[in-house]
Image (cartoon, rainbow, N blue to C red; front, side, top):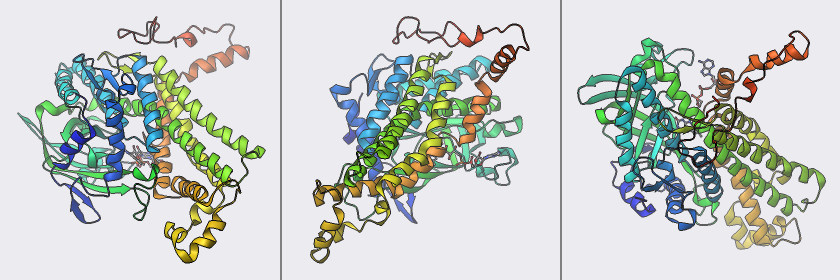
Length: 505
Ligand SMILES: Cc1cc2nc3c(=O)[nH]c(=O)nc-3n(C[C@H](O)[C@H](O)[C@H](O)COP(=O)(O)OP(=O)(O)OC[C@H]3O[C@@H](n4cnc5c(N)ncnc54)[C@H](O)[C@@H]3O)c2cc1C
């Protein structure tokens, strides 16, 4: 089934009121979370549109039915390429984050890790998860991912924390399920998601076994409270004024206070040895997703900068053209890293196809490092007006309009109306609450920057490079470079080959 946005709303607006915003308890129809719902609406619309069949939709590996791509477990490089393309397409439509990839990255991580736990421990998590997924796909549900725990003292492991609720943990195991408590934070989209996928956020030791827990739970289940921070442009902005004004995001602190999770929804229960594995599976998949969304964000910043240059009538000046080309470099290198990660990925034992970790991490690191620089280019080209533009009302009030109409025009080829639209857009992109959200998300989304370094140190073969250096320096007489050729594309003959294995591994 492919749900329409109206069907998505019906489910959402019937949910238990468990959202808190600024001291008020509210339902999902609260206007402050609407800009985020508008983003999800676009993803449902894309799946309904025949034009995007096969991109916004996929064929389920479980049922063979047509499903929403966000509920699909990637089976081959093509699926990863389609995900990446869809993220960029949708990001450009909503002016930024499409918020669907976290849930998608979580289902990939769960499918892969439940199989690995079962193979090592003889448990039955994988079939449980696949049963869950069948229902999830058939109902076209929307899931977010709650991985980041509140963490408390960063130098202490979960079991060493003074406050045990710093990490979500198992309080009690019963025959029919588990009781969990604890706090997750910075969880995007949960205020308008049907389901929450809960995963551990870090490597765990045996003492931390109660913190080794993964499950899926409705976002309004008894015992769950969402303390939500909506981000959108400004209260005074008319949401219908421009396409960009329509969209926003909400992040929440998610409190689990003795929440019962039925057994059929529990996908990891005390297998502490798999804490690191599942955390990295989510993070690495998410870093691949960034190779779709971050190029979309660069496209938007590039568009805003090009418009600002035109409004300032400096679009032909050489330093402006050079700066604009930096966006092309950032966007397309990140996109290329995502393509490489898809093409050089691996088929896991679960059948889910996973992106190459090196390319996913280098792509993500590049975009994280560049994010403030990209905003800086916009600021440099636009001048200070993004932060000092008078309010809309003054451009329409009789006693100020006549002055501001002249003030706002810099390029004589542009009318006051178009000039104002450009500078409003530049303000929205470069100097609004949304700008701050994108800057911080650009650095920390998918893990703080050190996590990419850690991932690269785990997987990148630095020794091989050292052996190369020894050979070229004349220290060693020979150099075996057969390992350097290990990275053959995964597909033997076809990107669509469901059985495609990396035979060269
Ligand atoms: C806009 C936004 C949206 C997000 N959406 C989601 C979401 O939907 N789901 C989700 O699960 N998460 C989400 N996150 C959370 C994101 O994954 C985290 O912010 C990120 O992993 C960093 O974790 P943190 O914020 O706890 O920072 P920290 O991990 O505390 O990092 C802060 C600094 O402390 C350092 N540090 C931390 N621990 C140690 C240690 N043990 N030793 C040495 N140094 C240490 C780090 O390297 C870093 O420099 C979102 C974040 C943002 C900003």
